[in-house]
Length: 505
Ligand code: NAD
Picture 1 (tube, rainbow, N blue to C red):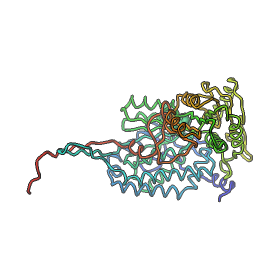
Picture 2 (cartoon, rainbow, N blue to C red; picture 1 turned 90 degrees about the horizontal axis):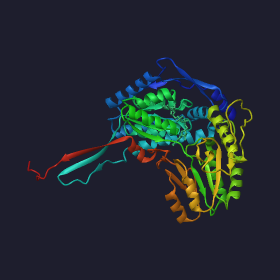
Picture 3 (tube, rainbow, N blue to C red; picture 1 turned 90 degrees about the vertical axis):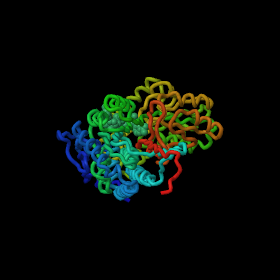
């Protein structure tokens, strides 16, 4: 196993690709613009990346459209696409260490998570959609005998995918894999903070056999490259994951351009509702702590609200704090590290700003609450797991997405009040209910307004199930066969057979 020093040495010699990947090759932006990408591990610049301008975005979309029309991907046999995407999945795993290092230095994810979760999950997503391709059938409608109506799925055309910085490989794969599997061309706009792994993914896709122009990656600033992609008339669908504010821009871009389809995966303020008959308090505490502190709380469905029955509040909170304090916060390149960095100084300051809000709201800091510096690291953005107790669910700490390692704790008495508080939010991405009563569990799961509900667990996920939000957490679903459908257009072919009997010749 590579040691911390080994990873640090490899990171120092890393030479990531930093161009725009358009039509199967890297190139600079037409106007030569670049932007620096900074590693949150130590605040140093890892690379200067080409910044796509409007003309570059047009080049990428035109290449994608041309490739789509030419049919070297869109009109091929499904089994051909299957073979290529399986090969891509294999290549991702063959390059696991390089991809993990890019992801860890770019996002601040612990290297062990990048190696064990981010890269394998990305590879599995490509394999899963590839393997699905010869198992999904089209439909035949129940027409009268004199007709035959076939309902088939066809690719939509050019898909624009715009993704955030928190899980670049995983979220890109959730969009790119089903879109390519369905036969579309894709233009991916990674976050300006974390473009490196997407650029490597594009190279690997070409190596696997994805034809030039079918998969393009255009790093760039959101309001320039993201907006140009959103407004482009040759883009047939935008699939976006990110903040609620930016998500709404894409609805605007669509309505002001060609009325393209838009799917939005937005933020969350997910509640973990713990009833008095929770049962195994330690298991619950572990799930609550990991549910918010994993990836330093920068997870859209992170369990940022703990709503706990007052009868078990003290016992549960003591255990949650114990687990939180036991997690090893440190240098992302240390294989022992469990919690890495905050993405950048802006995000760090935003989280620290919420500590002032908490103070003004009279909320108790039950644990954490300070900025820290792991041994041997200069610079970088690190924050202790923090527990805020006595939170008014209706206040800012209870309602706003902090996107950091901050757990907001509120109490209630009885299941009805717990569920009412859980639903008292503009978000509806995920929720959990903890109880030993099976009827209460089922009823609560029905009442919770969220795209995913966990019962006596949290953050169990797989490519086999859909993921997305209710309410202002967005619409559309990533993952599962539902996502394959989301990148396909349904076509009805109605064939007149008539009533005449078969002839003799
Ligand atoms: P963000 O909205 O700032 O950026 C997301 C993407 O949009 C980036 O690629 C960015 O460059 C681009 N962008 C920014 N401004 C733009 C504009 N004016 N026009 C077009 N594109 C623009 O989000 P972020 O800060 O990268 O990520 C954090 C947010 O993402 C959080 O709110 C989090 O909850 C959300 N998120 C949601 C999910 C989910 O599945 N629901 C998953 C992960 C993250």
